[in-house]
Image (cartoon, rainbow over all chains, first blue to last red; front, side):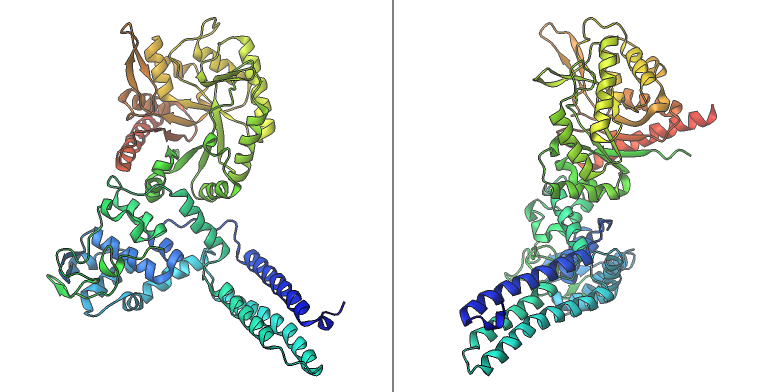
Length: 284
Length: 282
């Protein structure tokens, strides 16, 4: 059977099956390629948050941690205070940089914060990459090639059929081109939806399943941090979370927290409705 | 220096706290029975955990110390869990839990005689054959001393260990509870056992209860903090046991904040350190 001799509707059915086969084969290849059965289970909250939601989630958890320990405090209206002395003593470079951000910037938001903490975030990401939980440079390169291969396979078949159709004087190929285009976009989305490897996805799934009980008032700081890292700051049962502060407590309505006071510089941070302004809200 | 480990029994209520306090928890123990019907995906999560922290798999319904054979169906289900999780160790109790096809719902102390001893050895061999691991065997607590026993508990245990190569999971709170209820000296009990076969230890808490006649009994309930007598026994054991010990704190309910459980683990560490120091001096 020559598929290019199929009628238009028949070829469309054939092409849909072809797309499915290509996608399944590519997905299986990618899963096998990025599986690492002996990959570790991360326990550092920032690594977990980064694995789950990238820089923004890691930053949110960091802000919650800083608020919880009183390094960022005094939410009054749009005011906040950063204890510079305590911030400079923080052993974790990511936390130190996050605190520094709130001590030096006046205008901020999730994007500005994550841009500011890029350097420590890079080392966080490097650890996850070397553990096989996130795509490293080599795998990112392979992902590009795989995506190109899938798109090329889709358009090779489509191109031949289009050429055959045009050669036979047919011009009703609009829907077919649309289908091939949608499939190509879907392929890109499929492979670029996450920077996690399969091992990373499994590690996150394990952490999610192993930690089913919400933290509450009896939980200590490290428990709340871990829970926030796995499920998002907003999932930590905010009212029962002893480390939660409403960013606009006692002040104006709306989101964000404002400029500095006290022994430090300060910042405003847009968005967020939970713990620590920029760190708040979210979840997933 | 002997590298002893101190850990907790894994409970859903404590899961986040355990993972968040990994720096102070060296080992965990998982109750296999809680996951007999769990999908392989869920079990694989525990396998990932077992790669990070030594994980002991503990079952409660084998009924090893019985003239009734261990249930094949139950063994198969435990084997499935063990195969996926790949634990560092596997253990169950020297208890009587079923009569033919009737599950009695809890663990009874076996009649300590030769017949039970022989059957226990058969059950141990069968369990090892099906699960692929030699089970550690745990002494149990009981409120009723079984009638018709030909041996004391320590004599029976020592005899069993002399006829097999299985390790003894020594539950010190069970020793304390039985010693309290039946009037023997727990130190003498330990002296009668082959302590070189002990690698895993359970500690737990209990409470006093009274029957209708006002007779008091000490109950191993796993709902209270570990008491001083158990820490004292742990110290004694550490002064005599030659192998690295994994000490598991069992808690089955009324969970306190994790810092209290960690404090109990610290007390266990201190007791073992004192015992090890005595051992080095002697």
